[in-house]
Image (cartoon, rainbow, N blue to C red; front, side, top):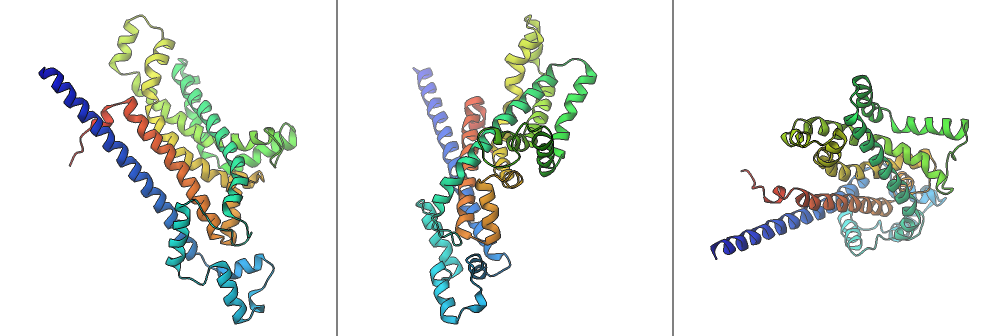
Length: 333
């Protein structure tokens, strides 16, 4: 009877620890979203230049040609007649309810612009993430399996090359080689799946290099563990030991990296979509920042931060499932 009671108490404590862990991670995620939105808003207001003048110029109207009454009407039309904090709370309240307002320069709902551009960026980022995982994990797995030292050393040096080469230079090189010289893929545009290959590979290489380097170091530490020696003693081959025991334990740090690299992929899309002239959210963000179109920039930041937070939240929730000690580890004061 005492054993059953002890087990019941332990299960209750485990559930309580998991609930606190999940609630803590959700609270952190909401705080990150609010912080990203707020910081972006105030940074945009600190940028040099007159927002009204930029918007009127984009519409073909010079601010010097307007009277004081017309300027007041223009400020009222664009919502610039209110204070900075009043505009901030108004935009924040609308964003919480899914209403990002209208673009100040395009005179279109921001949500409509995102619906148009988001599929292009999602397809690019999704393919880049898949390619980076396949390339990074495959390279690290091959490096760990190879026994010939010169080849092993050469493979272990490739990740350093991957994230040391600038992304813009790599993209221009791919365009010159595979688009202009060989003609295998289109250089720019959104013409089907073929136009995704070069930008996705360009975006995937830095992330793949990071995955490969971390996993290579993970394999180096795992091979020295006692359970690896025990697996060899049971008669398993090197390939079986690596697949069944070494990879699972060496790959655990990749979960955190995958969450972090989602943010890098989204930010990298701005540069890659500009290089390859793709009409995605990244290019929309660049155009909106240049025009100081605050509602568009804030909406893009909110969507990007939400994607980053959701992926990292999923990663945080997967960790206790893979290693229950994480949720139960007491805090050290």
